[in-house]
Image (cartoon, rainbow, N blue to C red; front, top):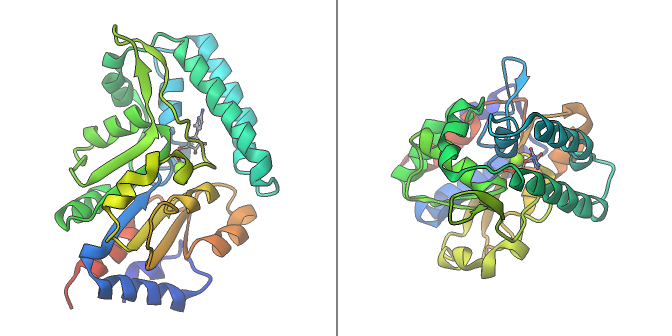
Length: 289
Ligand SMILES: Nc1ccn([C@@H]2O[C@H](COP(=O)(O)O)[C@@H](O)[C@H]2O)c(=O)n1
Ligand SMILES: [Mg+2]
């Protein structure tokens, strides 16, 4: 029913279950649907031409406003903590305090760099960030059909919003929760606003009284998009979930992570830099039959 599900990049533990959820979402109607998505490495690309694309943090880390010493320190943090973040053999209990440590140290370093609010647009323009192929269709389909898109990111909110703006797809149906920069009266970065969002606390605990989800209490069908095991809890604040389809982008260390991703996500997209499958599913749901 959806040709994109036949792509070589697609893996499903239970294809019949997937087809069942998609049919149920379609049957319940567009008015019941919301999309909850991660940003970095989910809506943005993981790689291009054999090179890693930057996360919203990396965009700042690599930018011209950071001193050479600052760049080195931020890179050292990435090389130390990223393998911990994706290590399938460590428990969440082990990872959480280390993730808080990484984000806190990185945010402290960035806050010492006198980053100006007015430079953000240029920093994003000069970066190598790319949204996944098919992003226009994805954002436009959701907008045209009045489907809310909730972007829940442990990245840097100011940066990811600027990326979406520069791509001309920041439509009114989008709501973002992320780590936002805190600028002083002169527009100089002095810190990050709380709560701190890292890969493994993307749940109710950081959504201020889940007001957003209360407004959307009638949206009982969810399509969840993520690239990390931590993204699986992003819909926990939704009071009544009837149908949930979890789609996971498996970008890195694919063989090592395949088993866990197949257990956790309904659809796993391996080294797929496009939104083709998501667009195909949305197109099927939005098309009247
Ligand atoms: N200092 C840091 C901290 C985290 N990251 C990466 O950001 C990603 C989190 O953002 P999501 O939109 O995916 O929630 C995650 O992939 C971390 O590896 C970083 O690059 N630098
Ligand atoms: Mg991500």
